[in-house]
Length: 241
Image (cartoon, helix red, strand yellow):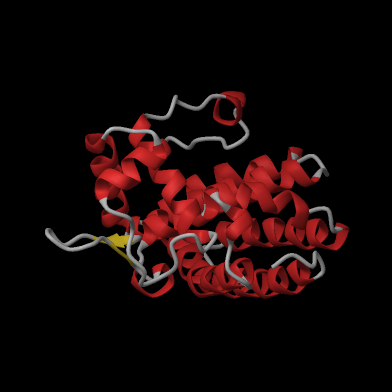
């Protein structure tokens, strides 16, 4: 099975050039997040909005279609475009955007994400050990050479959970986890500056390897649940919402 390393230089330094519609989409998302276009308000008329953004109307329409798809706005022909309440009407596309625009994250956004991971991770870890113990053990061997640096731990931890979701056999786990990849890789190095967080995670990796060797799925589940609880505790020490 192919796995992808998040610490690849290409992954960190190379990004495709954004299309005009993608740039406009990002500008409008920022406008929604910073309150320029609050929930349940209406966007300016298409011509006015296109002129203010300095783009053509076809480019604006493409951006609005993208925003509609992800739950940011609601378009009804012949009526003003309504700004949706993204926290109650949005979808995974909103999660991706919030990860990209972390300066505008809602209060307690990261603890809430960790709570979601707490609900999911024990199950996908159990399934991974049950379905693909050999592949999981091969991945966990990398922990032996894990450097004791926050960035190294952040990259390894992300790759581990991504691998667990893939090996679980349930692609929905993968899609949900991928929704906050960028946010995780930006904030996890802060989390792993805490020495106890690194030590606890290293213990988790070792114990998960032992559980995988013995096909102890229940142990894998309980270990993962425990580390997720610890993550919430350690995260609060960073004083970041």
